[in-house]
Image (cartoon, rainbow, N blue to C red):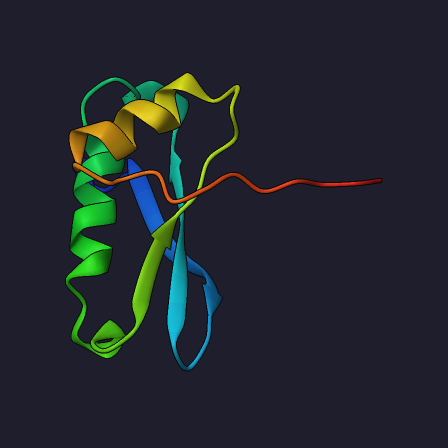
Length: 84
């Protein structure tokens, strides 16, 4: 939050018994301030997620999202393939 405005948000984009994946969005006026990493870190510390494997995914073209993962010290565990 910045004042009364939402600056960035993290949600469980996928939530299962054994794992959860975070979805992150930073509103354009607030980008470049490290807020995506901050909300991701806060999300991962939620007690309701205890005992689950937590995932952060990004596309190969999303450099900003890759910087968030790097800032948090996350390790690459693989790439997904999509066939249309």
